[in-house]
Length: 76
Image (cartoon, rainbow, N blue to C red; front, side):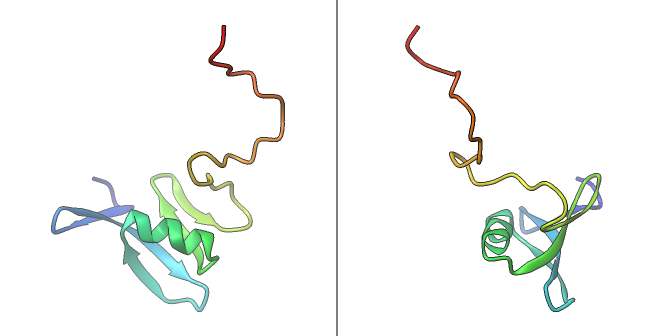
C-alpha cells in the first residue's frame, strides 16, 4: 500500500478532490462513477495527482476510444 491509497475495513480508498474543492477518500468503483459524471477535479495515483480534462484517464473496459482498424482478430 502506498500514500495514494488507504485501507479501511479491507477496502482500498483513493484520494479525490471534488469540483468544489472538498477532499475525500473513495472506493475504486465510486471513482469510476465520479470520473464518468465529471464530479471530481482530480484524483491521486501512485505517480501523482491526475487532473481530469488535462491528464490521460483510461475509459471503462470495452470502451477504449480507439478509432483505428481492429487488428486483434480471433479468426486466424
